[in-house]
Length: 219
Image 1 (cartoon, rainbow, N blue to C red):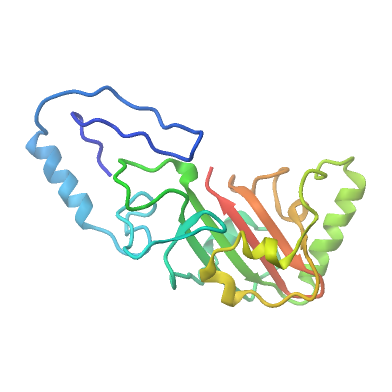
Image 2 (cartoon, rainbow, N blue to C red):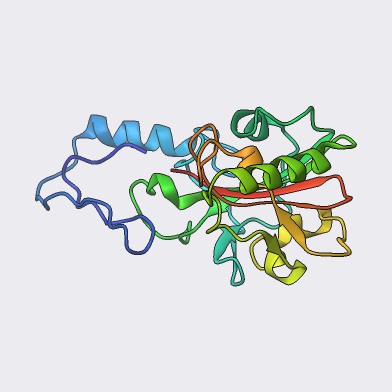
């Protein structure tokens, strides 16, 4: 998105994190700038447009009240790019389902959404034994790290999990006979961020299962 030099910039970002605003000025938009804006606006395809996040969004957004996220029903990617970038320590995954979206209404007129307005979630199919390894590594770190991860929920019920994951991914989630176990310490760089720097809100596995479910937001 090209910022207009004579337009008022509208605050954006997540609640409680105001985006800086610029002064309001009068005057006409130069023709050259207007032509560039039209050229940029016409390009793009996919969920966030060809230009990536910040480009014109795909129509059909819905708001999931449980997770308080905007998503497009049916828009699920099976690319491993985000998983490879943020969780390089995982053994080779067998399949991935990824949903992405926004925390604020994509239909609102804002110049450029704040970086932390974007979220992504994944259902990751792990090879046999990988989920058990993550659980064992997590428990070992929790026992030896002096409580570094004590503030993170160690388990999530199915209801708590489904309140976080968007409906687009629910058909991909396998039933779990018990609670989902948090494996944050085994997959993150610090107490709450991935290797690539996103805030990790959830990273859970079902003991005895072969899925890793994650929820993260851009930082």
